[in-house]
Image (cartoon, rainbow over all chains, first blue to last red):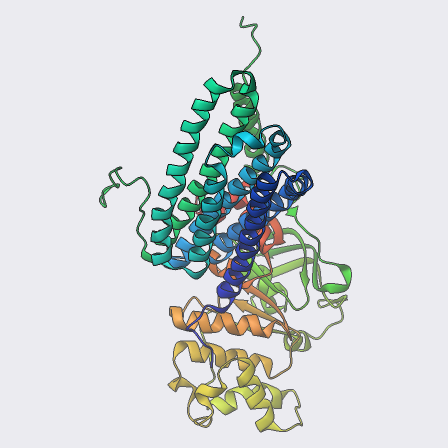
Length: 230
Length: 292
């Protein structure tokens, strides 16, 4: 008897997509962890490896997009399956962006040797640890389609934003204290920004979980939604 | 005269405009001598059916024009195109069914496993090797059992009849639904079941190729889904060619798709390629519903 409770071939393709997204999530998480460790320990070797692996992130991004395109073309999915593909395309982009920020963080490590004393006077390391936690939470929420976990991510991101603001304030003070170390301080601003952007992209992923599971678009809270009749 | 260098945006716009003009001028109508787009070719050792320079007429109506394509073994090939494009006509050329229509003429070649089916070939034997399922289910006014076994008996089958009937009904994904009423009238089945019975009947004479002319167009969505799953399973043993108006169906079930228009082959390629990046604008217009 043919089992119609599952569309077997669409489900097989969706399973392939899920495996690719798991792979992408794990790789990006390794990149972020590596970049943070490289920054924390001034590890130039680790930083180099993170930069070199960014090509793998880019290659996976293309694979995920191609699989989404294939599913859309061949199976014309609707309802939750359609939302999954839309979410997958967007999550894929966010993950690639996170990978890019990890690479940028790793690049900055070469400048850190000269400013480990300065970074200690900011909250960049704390923010980086928090950003990684937010990212892991968001990835977990997406892969498990856990809307409650996703909503928690939105709250935890605020911690990273606060730490980022505190870092910028500290760096602003450091500019006056060390006027001859402007270049290094600019690097610190960029590093703090990269960390904050990682958490922002993780928040995007969490918002997509809500969209996927509940069909509600919670982005840009104050923007009025298109009317049904439009 | 504007001597300044064009901006990047202006250059890009110009490039896109040139590409559009090129595509349109090569598409409408198909230029003399222009070849159909052919994607990845079928490896020679996988070709089951080969159509070569085939032309077909209904009286003076030139219905098929210089068709050449390969059908790969153990795959599902879909023929798509607007009404009147010749896809069903071509399908019937693959097992000489068009000969039953008076006033028709064919030139060119159709080969199955390298042997021409029109030269020194018995059409009855051809139709045994290349079976057909039609749009409207057409079971015999007999029992389910008799429907399946009839063709096999006519063709001299000497084996165990019960085994053959069960095997064919299982292959057609109908066995579980009819095993307790094999000797009741086939007319008591639903439309979807009748269609699968027709498939079982076709399989009983052990064809190598199964042609299906819009097999699901008379079926409801559930019956269609069952039929599509059956087609998917059948290709492990048979080569399947399906004519369909339903492009989403073609995308779901086929490995390769051929698009026809006004008697000509416009494009043939792996289904995924044709439905994501077709080479011909006319193909793209059709599959996106911009003409039909």
